[in-house]
Amino acid sequence: MLRNLNRLLSPDILYTLATMGHGDEIVIADANFPGDSCTDRLVRLDGISATEALRAVLSVMPLDSFVADPAITMQVVGAPDDVPPIVAEFQNIINETADNPAQIQTLERFAFYERTKQTYAIIQTGELRLYGNIVLKKGVISPE
Image (tube, rainbow, N blue to C red; front, side):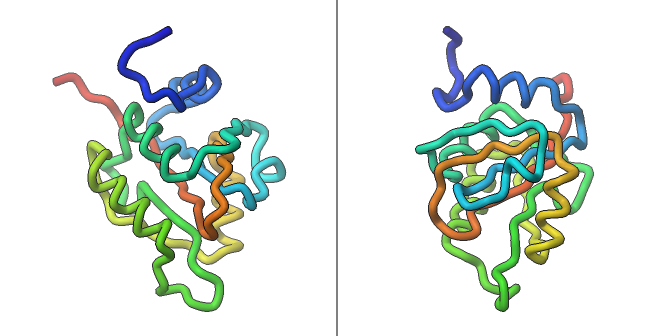
């Protein structure tokens, strides 16, 4: 047992986050996302929403402050400027939780899939809301 950790951070997720380096990326994906075909490092959080997973991950992982796009979501097909409700929720969580809050950027659907294939790992949630996927780039923890 450990203290002060979000209960959703399983040993597998903590190991994955701890072994990532600065600049590595992780995906928090919804239940419809092709997680298994996009990575060799898939961690499942069935029954948990993507927003809960995002809040838990950001409680221990810094966002990269050296890039313009440390958080990326998938554009709505046919309406790339639309902001789905879950993406607005992601932005609120980043604003409230991240040590380096950043504006979420977007990628076209197939570009998003290609990007996720290059990430360190995917956390697949039980999220059923459409467009509940986000790529996060890990930052550094500096001495203070």
